[in-house]
Image (cartoon, rainbow, N blue to C red; front, top):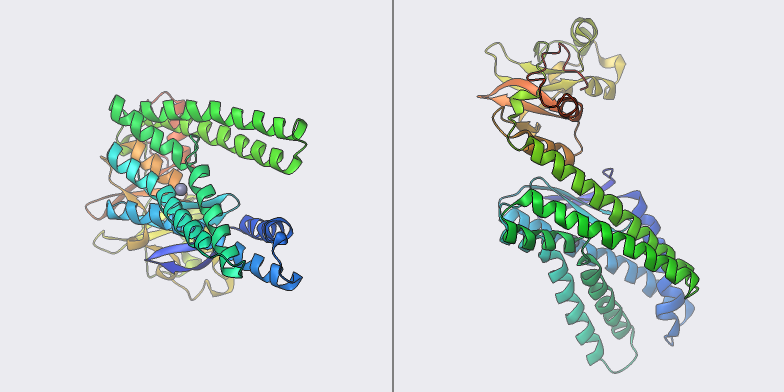
Length: 380
Ligand SMILES: [Zn+2]
């Protein structure tokens, strides 16, 4: 899932919209205007204006749902980077797993619980209004849509919240997070296929093409995500007792921050065929990391003037791991953030890199590579 357009920050969390969300926005507006609000005694213009407002409020509802997850995560000390709204709802980029079944259940359940609360409140408020006003129509719509959000997200298939609640329950029973993940993933797998079957049923027996395609699509997504969760859990259990140092690649050399980008390109990146290099001061303190992609982002005409420290990722913005941390944690962080490599840092010094290619190479070698001393940090 790409980053999408940034639209602002809420409670220090970056909020973004994925382009696919615009499709849903148009689809929701169209569908509420032609069916849901079409029965109201309003003018055509009013119906469309109310429908656009309804689609925007759906967006707010999904955002509140995601914020509930994120704020509970943060209350547990888990950093939350961003929330991206996309085709099927939202994703919060939460950087690690909960530390206990209770916390996991709380974090996963917070979203549906907030949708349920808003849904009940809006529905009751709407039903309390007896005249067919716009406010009544909107409140009942919001009640319906939030209740739907709560129910849909509680379905037991990854990546939906229900699968995480199920995993938390299995985790509490088995005391084994990875085993619980695999069981929840298997359940999700079966459930995804049931959704696909339901989709086929809707198309052929109910003659409901859109409903059927929608069910089939969600089912397909649930099957895919559950499979991915199963695979990742298997990989993580293989890496649970392997320290990061065993599969990190070593930096070819370090680079000073005060040389020009042209010198960096010629004397370091080209000469060493490096992809990423640590930027250090004369005392060996890590100042940041500069990669080929950072150079490519800058205008070549200013390479004679701009320095490495202008283009690097500063140390405080770097994603880091310690060499003694389990490789499974590093892999998880790579999977939940959209960065290519983690810097392995010990006592303020960069001692290596971990990337997906390195983890993969380690697994393919049957876990015997041990400290890849490739000069360029292979695969970065
Ligand atoms: Zn959720």
